[in-house]
Length: 125
Length: 125
Image 1 (cartoon, rainbow over the protein chains, first blue to last red):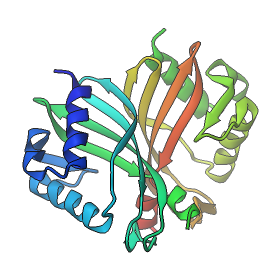
Image 2: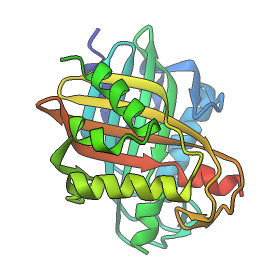
Image 3: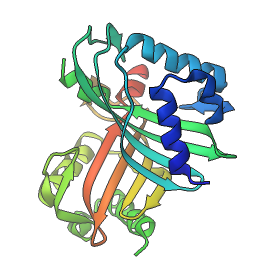
């Protein structure tokens, strides 16, 4: 199956906060930066992200796919309400990027290796 | 041409500090995180990296290629001598990752979009 189409649907799922569908895209045993979150922990992480960033929206700037991996550069224009990545953003409008690699198995994400551009965020505060 | 092979040769060039060969892999008008460094500015950036991190070595953990783009997850086990990414590393041995996307034109890198995991570095200090 086309990983890019799966990924686009996954991003739609996040932007719609359609948590009950998350398991369609994310495997039960998913890891995030080597942390064995599992699907429930992954969902909790995303729910916490949205709780702290009510206007969070995932924008895909770049997608590179080579089975079984997909790389993506995401852009966020958002206003974290309090402390984000250890920084006192306190509702300011900021723009930041995430470069992230996903490994798929059986059409589901099993491994996420993500870096958020904290240095660029700091420069905006 | 195979972007992965070009990229492996580029990484060898960096690890050998073969700066006179950098123009084989990097275009004159290269940009780095939207900064129009050009080849000379790019070389200067790398030389400064090596000056501040004498034991710097690029290790490719993951490569994803889809023409004209390539994504890479790099790992560094190194000892920055002073302040690195604004943090007082002061010679400590640290491990960090960079997730980076390259765009190629005419077999040369024309655009680099890089994020280094500063948060993970902070956690080690």
